[in-house]
Length: 122
View 1 (cartoon, rainbow, N blue to C red):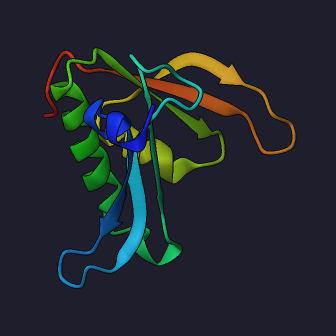
View 2 (view 1 turned 120 degrees about the vertical axis):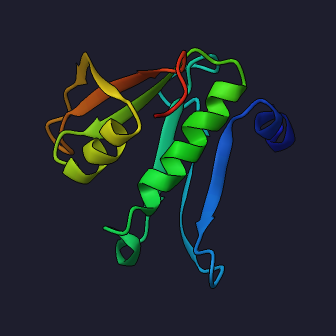
C-alpha cells in the first residue's frame, strides 16, 4: 500500500502540534503493527517536555473517533507493563485490558488493550 492509500484507509501517523505555536510535540495514529488492517493498533509518542498536559489523551480521542467513522469495529493497543502514563491515556479513551500479554524479559511485557468502536466517546 502507498502512504496515500493508508491515509484514505484511516491508517497512518500524524504529527501532534501545539495550537498556538505549531511546535511539533509528537505523533498519534493507527498502524497495523502487531494488529491487523481491520482492527489496527493505536500508536502515540510525545516528547518528554509535552508529558502531563493531556495532549496524548486529546490526540488519542481524535484518533479513536476517526477510526469509528471508518466503520472499524475494534482497536488494539500494546503497552509495556511499566508505562503507567500510557495505561491512563488508554483507559480515559475507553480501552480495557484484553487478557493478552506478550512476555519480553529485556524490555518488559506488552499488555494488550482493546476498545470496541460500537459506541462514540463519552
